[in-house]
Length: 159
Image (tube, rainbow, N blue to C red):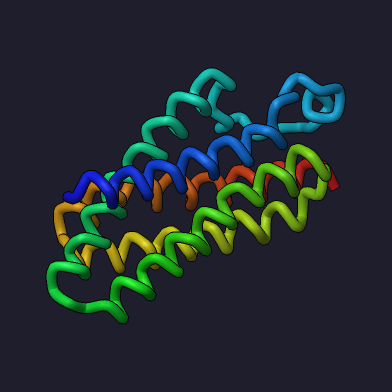
């Protein structure tokens, strides 16, 4: 893994984290506290811990995949991977805005589902480039699938 690649993917994931956190700063807002939430919702303290680990995971595994494509002279694969990563990170940050800032539950569920699909695709692409990196990215797929279920249930409970 090249230092320049991991610095670029770390910058991209850090930017995503910052943009998303701007929208979700007020998780103690009256609106959020009033939402009915399912019993399987993790405690609030779990979210920053999980997301910090996942963003680090995304940065490292994506750098590995990008370098694998580069080393194989597969510039189309590299370009497609970077586009898939960019799409994923935009969806990732967008969810926080749709849910926390704009309070749009059904659209947030749709964004969560799109993010889960994008994450599954990114994990597949990562595994094609480097199976170990793909396996390391699998928790991100699991978490976004769980987040889709959680968002959908919150939407259902608050109709």
